[in-house]
Image (cartoon, rainbow, N blue to C red; front, top):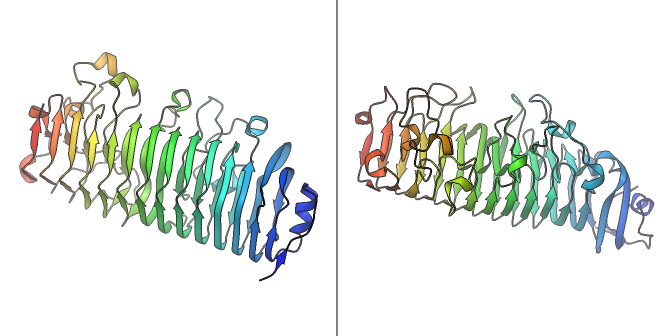
Length: 439
């Protein structure tokens, strides 16, 4: 390895001259440097470390490009000790949610860093602020480590002023063997950390999202989308979904602490803690053959404080590629949910040793007009239940062969409506034993 440590002026041209023939370790000049157009490393750049030296790269008001830094087909690239200011106040424009068949890397511009088709990418101690769209997009890459970064005050809105999912870190299109850890996200309009792939694109695989902290997130703190073998461990968050005017109502963008989308299997969400979530704590839409273990979600306010409040944990089956089955929900704490604790569809689930208290804080169904206690048609007991065994979600998926054992379930009407089932679903066909139900 060799070093390039030239005495160059802190200017865009100085940086471009340093990166003209990349290799070894390049130390950027000290200072605040305005960037007017995308700095694109040559395709196939390899074995390169880019280090800041009290360096801030700031997008100029006339910046044009997909991101400040981009690289395609990179190998063994490290970027560290750097600050990136996206100048959102000058560059933000209304942008819709990307079409379902278009990768986000092809749709959103004015991002922080864009990496495509890489093998071996490491981002460490990089601070992103005021990014118009995504702080970081990594697309179709292998061996990705994102450590000790911070992202703040980032993301754009659509023409209605709603968030369009942007703002945080996005891994897409079959990114494999990745870690996002020990990082901080605050004041993000869209999702904090997100794995996503277009339908029929490769799934994201073998990932870890660990010990990150989220504050004031407009959509989801974490979303695991179209993935397999992802561990979400030890993350913390507070004030999820409280950018009330920017919640994406029209596209059903209910805020969630840990969300799921597409087809997600053999994954675990464990020991995460969220406080004050105006939405769902954990959404399992597309999740199967996995575990939800030891998580905590606490809301301490009044029901009127959570206009998008919901169940604590909700199962769903929107993706036609999966069926909700064989999920272990064990040892979780749900405290202060606006409606019930767990909405269930599918088969073979085990709901064990959970503590679920202060449920149905909205006092459904008596408060229909005040808190929107709108039950499913012909299922008036839906929102009054602690655990509700449904017949369908987005698609039919009758709850069957469910084990519900040794749970604490308390709150409004919970002595009477602790575990309930939709018409046509027989509780006698499930194993329900040793639960302690009280008001």
